[in-house]
Amino acid sequence: MDHSIGELALRVGVTVKSVRYYSDLGLLPSWRTASGHRRFDEDAVDRLELIRRLRALGIDVPTVQAVLTGERTLSDVATAHAEALAVQIRTLQLRQTALRLVAQHPEEIAVMDTLTQTGAQRQALVTDFLDAVIGDDPELGGIRQTLSPELPDDATDHQLGAWLELSALMRDDTFRTTVRQMVADYRADAFRPDVVSTLRQRVGPALEAAVDPASPEAGALIGEITKDYAARVGRPADDELRTQLINLLGTAGDPRWHRYLQLLAAVNGWDAPEPLLPIYHWTREALQHAG
Image (cartoon, rainbow, N blue to C red; front, side, top):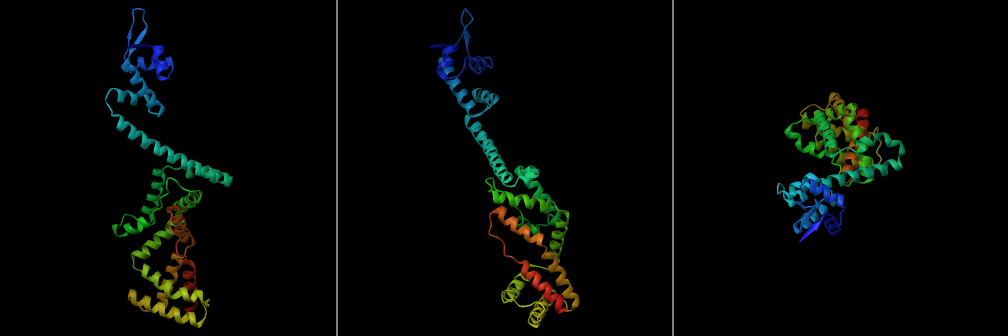
């Protein structure tokens, strides 16, 4: 059974113009009658149905042609197209969230470029920041991973707002200098996690009890902390060591660093970090009074 161009178009539910277009491309084999009219066999119905369905899914004509000629399988094309659509959907979701944020804070319209960065652009910023402050030392690979923000594809307004502030911090040269110094202190074994743990355990209760950092009680506590730290680093517990601790705590107590950790947790969907700033500030003040 053969069909005219009009019959084929009606049967599949497309326009005559579309049938003519696909036929001219060679996607629908046909022949002409003596009077010059195109005729299509029954196979053309199935081919046109496939073309219509693939085009309805947004697959371009060259790809449709590759499927019909056997250059690509339908499965491969569908998989690739689904992955491409997933990227588009994620991008649109991010834009939607960005627009909601701007709707709430119109003054932020100037940062729309930051809000709509691609995943590759965000990763490039994170990599540049971590390269600048940590480098590629394999011994610090775990720390580098811990400090890496990863904005999810379905980011909430809160996460997107956190990313906006975080990206500004990562670009801040003075903040980068602070973090580099913190990393140098860590590498020099001057301010390791066990020091932080000691301060948390010893100074935390003093803070809760509202002990005055200038009081004799605080002085005795700081004396013990300084003595323990001196033993750990193999140095005398003198004024020079106290000055070093004051400087270390000044760097580690930079409010921007603690804000970075808060924003990092927000972006990554982690629990909020423990607030260590009050402990660092109290210890620093007590050290200054003890000197």
